[in-house]
Image 1 (cartoon, rainbow, N blue to C red):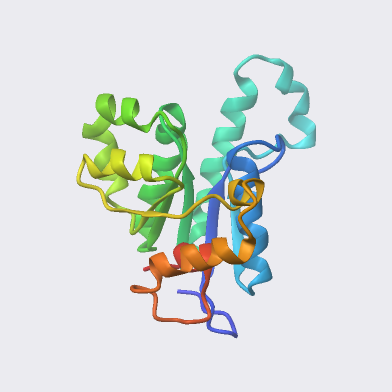
Image 2 (image 1 turned 180 degrees about the vertical axis):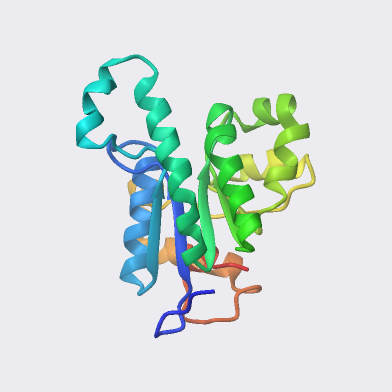
Length: 208
């Protein structure tokens, strides 16, 4: 495994990044920035990589852009061998099968601890239909991070333990100070993360 000079783990962040600047992309960019501000090295693997310049004309062909982007994402997964822990942003339905599943299996094959950071209110319907396939993938994570008690209850019905950490962007919009947000998320994981210099999402992202 990789170890930086400051003994901080190298974090592989697998997520959709801006553009577009919305939803999970903003959360992922915020997490990357704050981890790096705290001194962590982050290796980002985008699930929505842009087309290379010579192929951008293909973006006008329906379905081709997504297929090429998915192929580039899969080709980038071996970069995770350079990290100590994988932090994966996941959602339901096709997103889960195209991105969360191959990332989770790659993490397992490389022997890297996996954090699944799950977003989306459709988790109940998704698991109701696809639990037989999804649960073995989700069980590879330690921990599963969710932004709300609602999602924690959904996963709990399937015997999956979760850690609830509010989204940093949502916290700021609701006038919750960054200090309070970090304090709350730190208290959740402090019992299992002995390194006192970790805080907030940094603690959860490196929780293993």
